[in-house]
Length: 334
Image 1: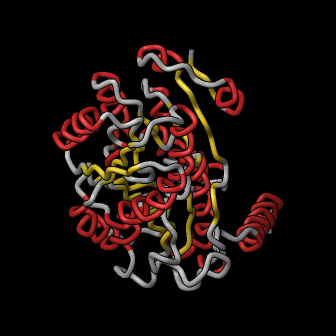
Image 2: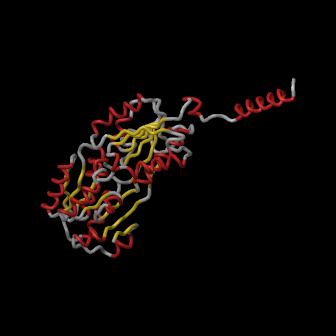
């Protein structure tokens, strides 16, 4: 054998050893291609851009860069929750590696469509009460996810309004009846809180843009101290700027669940950090892509709570925000 041929044979042998020694990722080995992640949401894509970005960031923290290590198939119901089951079925038929159901209606639509495709949910409601998981610490099965405290903080938003207007006796709660889990939970938790502060609670409903106009008009007619917007609903998240504008035009002090409402011109917001919840959701998807099982991943809670105040909106409404409230705020927009 010539020296050149002997060298080539040795190089070939080394290459074969390296190929055997370096294992491919589990998903690459199973699928032979870049894994596909399904992303299902009930809102409008353009209004969820910061949240989708946070989801992608969570994936990157787990080692998966979109377009390089993973492909994401997005499905948006655009505020029409009745479209979610069909959109979820599309992703199941696409045989995605993991399905991220980012909203309570999306999680409920995806549940039960497949027992083999891992599902990671993001919800503002109690996932055990929804029947998504057996328990928070031991979810079991093929589903796990992240909860944010938008529903649970509803009574606290009412307390903030009471701090602004201690002598007012009427308040309104805005819910979306097409999302009954969130709507019913919010109303159930707000009623006793209203009684604690000696307030009468008026429940207003909106499932479409015209309903929002009607709800804010009714809130102004009732001369409520303020309007608490139910948190965690994709329809309301998608209409943040519209609701802030309606609150200003009808001179209704309104409290949203996330700082995006204040950034859009709303008066106050108090609630869980939904952006962080989406980041955590993306991170869980990445961990599952690496081979971890949903049953072994406890449901995470995005426990960061934020209070934001818009002093410009307060001035336009003729409201003086107490220093005690400003001192507790995480963000003040002047």
